[in-house]
Amino acid sequence: MDYSSEEAPEISYSNIDEYETKLYQLLKSGKFKVKNEDNTFRCPFCVGRKKQDYRHNELLQHATGLGASNREAKVKANHLALAKLLKDDLADAAGPPKQLISIEQDSTSKPKQDDQFVWPWMGILVNVPTEWKNGRQVGESGNRLKEQLSRFNPLKVIPLWNYRGHTGNAIVDFSKDWGGLKDAMSFENYFDANHFGKKEWCETKDPGSDIYGWVARADDYNSKGPVGEYLRKTGDLKTVTDLSKEESRKTDKLVANLANQIEVKNKHLQELECKYNESNMSLDKMMEERDQLLQFYNEEIRKMQCLAREHSRRIFEENATLKAQLDAKQRELDLRSDQLDKLVAQNDIERMKLNDEKQKNAIKNSSLQMASMEQKKADENVLRLIEEQKREKEVALKKIIQLEKQLDAKQKLELEIQQLKGKLQVMKHMGGEDDSAIKEKMEEMSEELKEKIEEMESLEALNQTLVVKERTSNDELQEARSELIRGLKELLGKKSDIGIKRMGELDDKAFQSACKRKFAEDDADVKAAEFCSEWQEYLKDPNWHPYKIVTIDGKTQEVINEDDEKLLELKDLLDDEAYEAVTTALLEINEYNPSGRYPIPELWNHKEGRKATLKEVVQFVLNKWKTHKRRR
Image 1 (cartoon, rainbow, N blue to C red):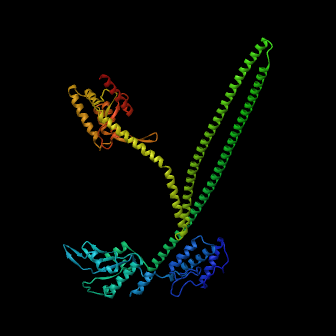
Image 2 (spheres, one colour):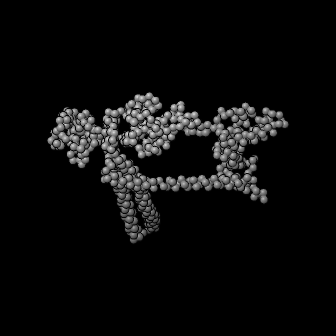
Image 3 (spheres, rainbow, N blue to C red):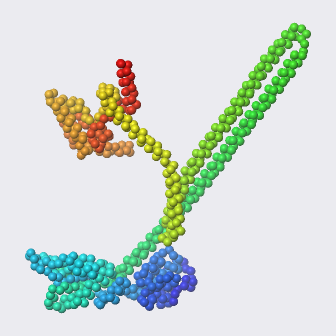
């Protein structure tokens, strides 16, 4: 009878144990069919599965795995009850694995379940031919015996030796699996079939020169002599049933570990989903705030534009009013002038008054005309200023919009890259091996992420170009310094402010001063030359490295090791002046030529005691040239 999920009521996780006990009793009573007629097994709870011919270990692994998974409570209880039945009631029905069954069918001598074998599987060879040679017994090597037994797939053959030499016995090692047992039984059957087995060896009194062999068992393990000693040293006694149960325990442990790993992966996946949801919510919130800021900015721009237009309108209206007033005054003055011209002066006083009034009117008219011209110029200046302000505002607005677009594009690109990375991580944990749709989606998202990263890298191409230009300029400067050094050796002298100094070369004056204080005046120069030459050779020695690494202000620096034996010896032999000359040369060598360790020329500012700049050298050469030109 098969089990149908519709027949059983829904249960909760708290009732799993109770439901498992009831179902175990039903399985034990035989209500559900578990064992097939051909001694294979089937799962009564997975009726729709094609495979219904499990071996005992396979069905146990299937039931244990589903019982430890995160399935429905009913599915877990069903398979936990089945696993308990297989472990407690059908363990003896499991039998040895398929490999062992085939061995029993093909072999004339079948190993019993309770027979104790030496494990790892071993065979015993006795009566191996030996001979007396050079004061000891010698026989065939293990490799030669292995070649003769190659049909049984031995791992190796170990001849047993003692103080007299070869004992005539050998141990044959087989692999530890069921295939190794099959090879060992074939090995024993071969010798039994040819009447050279253990039984014949124990019964015969004259074994002759033939080799006898059999599989090592408990009596061989407990026997005295070199064979028993070797077996006890390298193996253990186990039955086939013990090995089957041990393998079953390992399988159960493996399934439980895998189930725990799946549960941990599921928890990790849930954590990733939570983090992804939080990131999505944060991103949505940021985008909403950005839209609000952009809307507020646009509103402010519109208000500013409206205010500017209103201000311009008021200026135009005021100018129009002033112009109308000036025109009215002009017409009034013209009318008054016409009236005065028509009047006839009765006497000179009236004419003088009339002339004075005309002059005053002319002056006023001229002033009004000048005021009108100034007003016109002012109007033109106001219009020009308004146009310039309008153009400047448009240019500034365009720059602001362009910068905002670039910033938005960069922020959007970074957000899209982070979002794609998060989605990829989630998809990696969610997708199974057979989910082609998820794999295809992951490939599309990976391609899109690649394009986004390439787009972001293109934004950084300009920086790389600037770095290349800087390196090229630096190389050109170094070439210019080298060319100046080669061309100005004769022009630059030691007494001049700018000269050429050989970096890493010892100052012989320091050694001369030290030797004059230590030795007689006649020997001082010779000793100074000897010491200077000797220490110059020390400086060239790559095996001498009197430096140490120190950390100053968070940065590592290489300084002189004051505890170096040679430097301490120099300090004791001469004085601090010679010591300072050597340490200065060491620092220069380490800075300018640490690999070659020979002096190299460098442009030097003798006045300030530092490396001269190109500008200083060029200025010095120009001054020299001007002086030479004036002398000519």
